Structure formats: C-alpha cells, structure tokens
Image (cartoon, rainbow, N blue to C red; front, top):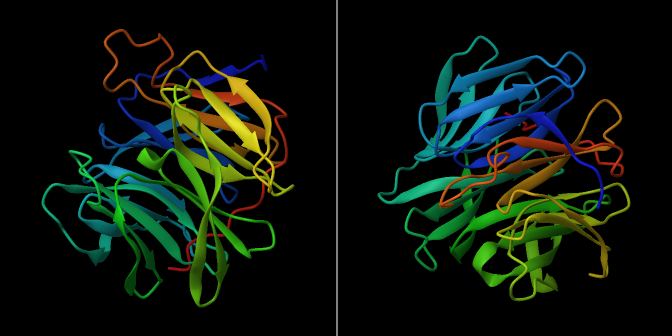
Length: 281
C-alpha cells in the first residue's frame, strides 16, 4: 500500500473537487453539501475556509484572477476582491451542480445531477467566458470526472452509475465517438472524480471503493492506491512540481464513518500531473 498523509483533517460532508491553483500555490477543494470552499497551502500549512452562496460542485481558477464556481442554480464568478456575480443562471428545481473541469480552450465543462439521483436528470454543459452555455450531454445521471489527454485530442468522462470511464474524441467542434475506456467491476465501487497525468494515464477515485486507480491510455489497470476512507471522491495533482496526488473524501451516508472520512489526503510523489488551464472568463 502506498503511504498517504493527512493534508487537512476535516469532517467534510461531501469533500470534492481538488484543484491546484498555481497562481496562489494552494490546493482548492470543496464540501459540496456543506457549502464550503477550502484552500490549503502545502508549504506553510495555512488553510482558509469560505462559505459559498449555494451547494457548490466545483471551483476553478480564472485567467484574470478569482474563481469560477459551479453552483446549484448555475455558474458564478468570484472576483479577487470577493465580489460574486452570476455568469449563467439557470435554476432547475431538484437539480444541483456537481463536478466541472476546464478544457484546453479555457471553456468550463460543468456537470449537474438530481438531488434524488434520478436517472437521466443531469447534464454536462460547456460555458465560455461571455456566459454562453451549450448542453453537450443530456440524459446524464451523476455527472462526475472530466479530463483531457495531454495532446488535447481525447476527453475522459464519468457518469458514475454506469461504472465506466468513457472516452471521446475532442476538438474545437466538440466531442464525438463515445466509447468505454474502462468498466469498474462489481464490488469495487463507483468511478467518481478523475485526473489525467503527464503520461496520459487516467487516475480515478472510487466512491465506496476506498481507492484511487491509475489506468493507462489503452484502459489497462496500472496502479491501485488503497485508502482507509471508503468514499474517496476525486483526485488531482498539486504542489509546485505537480507530483503530489491530493484526494478528497466524504462522510455523507456512512453510519460509522472512518475518522478520516471528510479529510483531504495526499500521496507524495505519486506521479507527474499536467498543468491545468484557467477558465477564460
């Protein structure tokens, strides 16, 4: 078993969305249901916690500073001075934001899901800096991990109940030719958040699997990192050299959560991540 460390001991209800912010040298992560945006500086150990206006599925750095937030009722912008405004406001009763990612062209690919996880109740949409939104995928149940290959020609995507990590061809026109990269076997958990490393391998966190797995570009299982927290939710590389793998975890729905459930964990020198583009807005 690869040694993990506790970056931030916490009791997040639904820890999610780890994202390295190179401009500030901090790791961003969220408690979706707790409406909390956390930052963690691995050099100084400094932590901050900020309340978000609504349940928040993702927070990503913007090119001009500040953050873009995937919120219950749409996508909003948080300016460096703390001011908030909506970029795209589209409330749908019973629906909330979930994971999101920034594409190579600087657009935000934002996922949604129903609170009751009703089949087909979610979407994946592409948003640009001027607020233009286009639904890319409908009939999604739990929109989760999204990432791109190092050359930007492939997009990986998870709709968790399918138990698959799917791959699409990607270019400036959009995505096409959806096909499965891997299928998670029964009893191993459900695929959740993912990240792609500099070798083009896909790392995916397994909800109810207590693990992060690395798959090669051809779908071969290459590595398994077992963790004590059953509900591992997402992973991302961070640190100045992008060599440390940060993993978020959740407590929600567990009758007897592990003491570290809801904490931010880190596996030092796990690999080499890719620099992530900021949102263009």
